[in-house]
Image 1 (cartoon, rainbow, N blue to C red):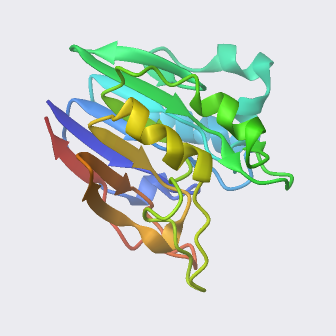
Image 2: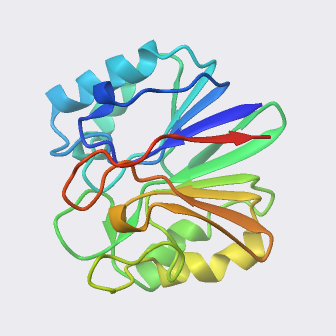
Length: 205
């Protein structure tokens, strides 16, 4: 099975060549302002891709998905994961859009107890974890050197021990690393100046 993974396209999805694969995964910030028009444009494009399975976890720019009334409008064939999961060919996938913060962004939660409640929902038999935020100190450093990942997410990972952890959010830290048996992928497509700098990641399972 081939996973095609990307994140942080911010309305530039039409300009990104998408490789063939079985599962297409977007780890958040498919839009920039989270408006209905932006979101419908992305969903139409995402839905039209030929991949058999399409998995979407929103990001902090994707305000449209915070409104419960909008969730019934997701096209058939797109699996929208908001603190929820699915199983594809015996692979257990869990997704959550929450990011640490106290600002007026989508799916923001305060660091500490508030955000920990979301990570405690992750099943311990998860194979592929998709979050928008990175864990603290793993592919989470912005250009100034500050690390913005989530401490509580980092604490839960040794318990869940997924095979793969896919995320985005921090454009400057796009890349991959393996630590303690977990393969981490920051899937950001754009740099900090919102230019397309990277390609979708292909993962063979």
